[in-house]
Image 1: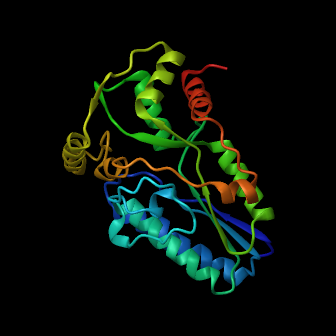
Image 2 (image 1 turned 45 degrees about the vertical axis):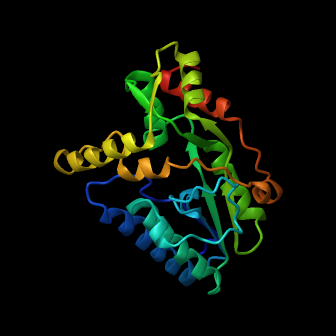
Length: 267
């Protein structure tokens, strides 16, 4: 970092399951602390860090109101699992650094999707699964989707324009899962599941999947943490990002279409 004016801390284990859950804290929490320490030592003028919108509300909270940067941060006990807890701790480290002489800008993306590269994220893997090997049923929920290229651009703008020690939610359109499946069907002409299952059934499936995964080492189709965060679909107040970062998220349909076409090998 020596001689660098701005540093982007994007690295994380962003999956919602690992055979060894301690890996989340090692990478996401301890890794962030090391980055903060190194940035201070190198005299970096600004650190732009990627968090996650998952940590901004207790997963059990039914409150349907849009989440904003000014909302009180939920307690650690309100995090859905080891990934969320590790990002909660990382966020604490970043907020402490704000008051300790380092200019930190924290971004909280929701669910980025986009044309996959060599690393396929869990949301993209989910879309790939529905396109090539759809399950017999789906969980009745909703997702807040954003375009990965727009998310990257927001980081660049944050480095240049964001106020000192500021935080921004990067969110888009919240789309019902059944509408997402309809878009995938329209693009691929492939049958999608029509049966939705209630949350408690998905929760039982997640628990059994996590138990089996301990022995197989293969990630479950839906982990306990993934099912928890899907229980209460969220909406977000993006006024601050719109004002300061020129944030103008693509409609969910367009983001899904871009991703699905890339997965299917379309132009």
